[in-house]
Image (cartoon, rainbow, N blue to C red; front, side, top):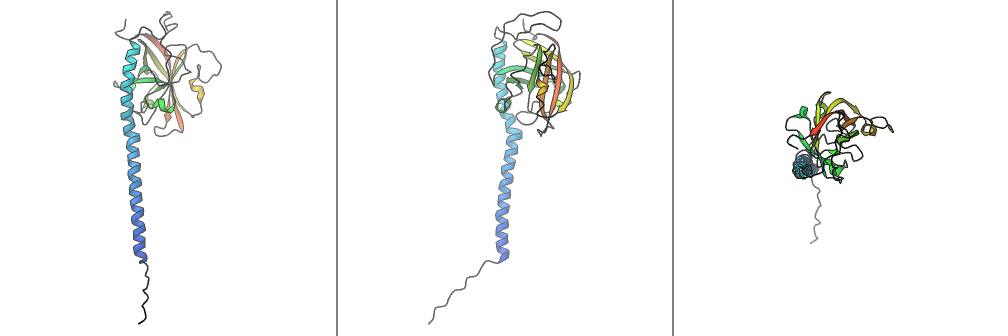
Length: 239
């Protein structure tokens, strides 16, 4: 009796299509979960991490403020000269100063760190190392995130001309008044020069510059806020 050869049959096209669609659906679901988790990390968890860093920095800043040294101010806006011990030279990532902007709320208070590289700015707003110290002649410049990592400058666009920006360092307090706010391109490094927009010109005023991305969730532009020192003195409660 002759052997009967079996006939190989292929899966119906409809079943194959269902299998492909099933695998594709699972991949899309997995990708959606990954994207969702990344969004949670980016928008929420980075803020949690920055809040922890700010607590650590606040303790460092309190210790710095209670040390004998204070920030050097060569001449107050009133014309009175103040002689104080200079603070230690800050290293990248060190607690540097505290900043308050009343327009952004009574709870808006951030420890500024030294440096503006990507890693340092995850801890809070950063002082441009080559810019002036608070209260000094020149341009005290600070950069900060507008989204993620606590988004300290999220609503910097709401700051108006005439608003105060208060900076504390080494037991001294400096009150700057906002003079202008505008949008520029990311490559415009002239905004943080000692005299903004004027390379090589010796400064005479005591200025502040805040920089951040614009729009809030994009880096295609830069939002710039300039201000000028109006008054300074010991922090309330300081001798």
